[in-house]
Image (cartoon, rainbow, N blue to C red; front, side, top):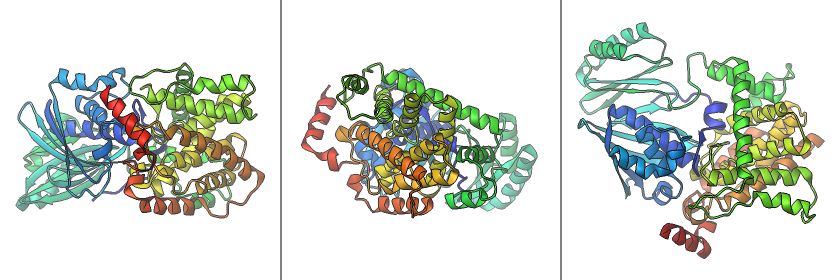
Length: 526
């Protein structure tokens, strides 16, 4: 049911702007909680949240911030608000009781949510949803009706008796077309009732929604507004969806990769090209601010690692490091962003919170080391974002699905293209750089220590940055990547699906070592 839109650089790849350890767990949960709150249509009093015992959330929902994200969604608080870490107090203040249960109900996705909400008015709403990676989500069912909601459009739902479904649907369609642009009109059946789902690009005011309800003779109604920054419309027609199609499109145009990224996102989001560039410039400014914060020796109690980013500069000044101005500045900036994240400061998930240091730290580190103009970093980030689009199209950014190759690995491939762009590469050379980098990280496990997104996450972000520099250089030198980017992404996805569950962000590898378990016990006791 429903059709997935082409990925957006600002929805699927670079973002959300957030606080917290994990975009899949915190931002995804917040968006699911927000949509559930909207569906309830009133003040939430109780929420029962169920996770499957075989999924990733059963083990990690507290340590990775799912509880925090859901709380923010249920109270309608943005993840940039500094009060998000006090989510338990927020729930208590609003009088919302949340209960978590771990069951064996055969969920088909590791990040599956089964929720039952009760409002103060006595209404009950059931919702099932999944967090698909990088903060992206999908609502699968609403009060037992199969639905398709990704949070990028306005959704109106109307229930009618099954025997009256056809006639009610006809009246509803006619009234809806008069009210505004209709993106999709879907029917879903459950028992003796039918649910009509109306998807629109523009909001419908309360008066229009009530008129539609009367026209359809509907019983229960739900209304959801977008939770993603870029909406969808009928004119979201992108010029290419794969790297192969991009090369063919660009054969006689000779555009650089950053220019192709601007063109793509402009078409995808129905945005002026100037706005695409401006949005990316704003994101880079936020990333640069994360570097600044991270270099100031951040502090946070629920944390494994101390502030360490400052040590790189000190050791370099003492002549104790392997020489390499760019390399060491990249390590410093990657670490700074990871420490900003771990101290609950605002970061941009790029493409995820767990991999938020690799891409921006590499490009900003290159800019700082070579004293490059800021506009070159913006262009590099646009190029990187387009690589992320191809990754999102063919695979996923969820380590719970395919291991850390989907997060730090993807970030490394994106960073390689961004570095190549900043050094003046052609679009084809940028794609080769991404292919080289991604070929180097196949099979990368996700095995966080002590159920925190710090170790070995920091190491892997740094590794991704170093891999990106080397991959960009060999591409610029003219090395043959041999296997095209699309094929490499496909291979990575296949390998990721083959990884044991224990190596996909649950409890395996380094996460089950004696040291990891001891650290976890210590953190839980404090």
